[in-house]
Length: 194
Image (cartoon, rainbow, N blue to C red; front, side):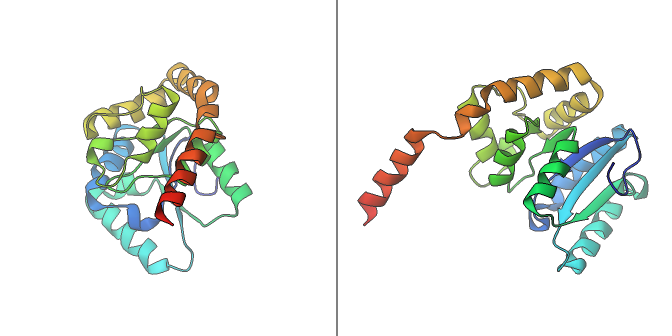
């Protein structure tokens, strides 16, 4: 189990630093939590920044209401092995906006976790959407916030849909790792800049 999360709950993980939780993203999180009373949102935070955590929770209570916000669980930063155990408990991962994931998306894909991403809302390179494109599987790349919320809700409630998404990611994730073409491109770039 997970401290602060009821047994049998559906776990939504946003494994990003607190700085990436833009107020515009609250709408997505609030919609997911309001639509599913069994859903819990898990956020990893830096224990050296308790004020950030406190302010973020105050904002969530204000933007989502106390009921939805009561199902938000903050977990202090974890060692890599513990992070992988936490990510493995997640039913779905949400890629935030306007700043999305990169390394954390690669880590979650390594565990075959479905990640819903909304690249049209991201203001920086949409890395998670790019990873899906590289894998040739874009069923969880949403064209809007509303579509993203619906995808998350379906992944939480429909076990067979979630299992198919996980299987698709598992069968394609090798395309993200050990790609010599990427290494060659980086080498060429380094040589051209030196």
